[in-house]
Length: 417
Image 1 (cartoon, one colour):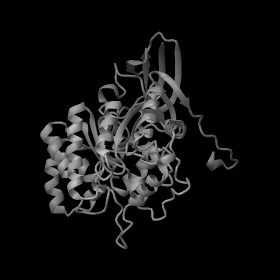
Image 2 (tube, helix red, strand yellow):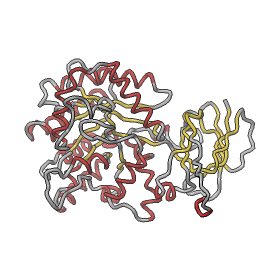
Image 3 (cartoon, rainbow, N blue to C red):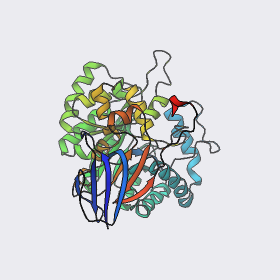
Image 4 (cartoon, rainbow, N blue to C red):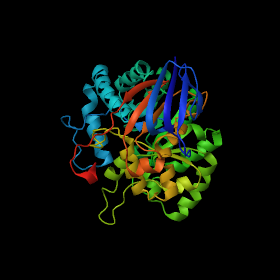
């Protein structure tokens, strides 16, 4: 099938171009292409960018916030874990898949085509993992899903958690997960990091650790994760999610830590909306907002991306899969809003996430790569971010997934027309 998507703007280009797609791949990109094709689609002069990437989501938790016994009254991370632990025993593969599909649809209609989801494996039945592995295969033509074998209640604080993580990898999970700051003792947290790296090497998997998601500045598992990743040469396959404590470290320690972070080349994921909500709960004033050092990580040349994390679950009562909203919150809270920052802000929910998921060889608007892209109702990235614009179109493997009709304003007032 040969298609010509006409009249789009690309980042850094002053004139509109056409995107010629053949057999699901970008074949040619340029202005006013003269090619033989089966279909010509006018993209209305909108900005074309690679699809949004949500690199950190919990699809097994979505839409459980109102479940009996699941309401988190304190709004803290630890109560969220406790509420989930107390209410997850009645999960079924069918029910979980139904909820997860709702969330995937919500994200897809906001331009997401790539998702990394965590699956709680602290459950002898491995219900979450089985359901999400099934969805990964069932929906692979519409959305790319990676699954993390994640021990929500601890790799060692939950009896046999390490064995369940390994079982998850044997079943086909893409990444090894851990939650060292939730383990009962520091030594167990360190042990979980060592085990995570050991399993990643044994099964040739990526790593994605919930790392130091706390305001406690003594929570310092990031340095161990980065050091081991550096020593084993797997930094680019390793991700530290959240790293909220990094925002509370004293500057002398943070400066020292930055050296091994830079050497390791690990990836970072920040979840702005959720961590702004969850963190600082034990503070009076000044009240911390719980974000990692986003600006400093960027300035150090390290890779960092933003994620939704939760959609109406015991940790976060909101969330709707709109990464533009996540981005807007993140750049404000992290104070990365210079003109240069705003020009590049979309990277935080696109190419940086693709790098984290190790997808860059198959991601991007470039000749020879899969024809996956979205368009935004703007002509430049700056305008798109400042105006928080909607996704107008989503194209996957050269096929249009959806098209949103332009907004129509009915008014008799001339200045508003």
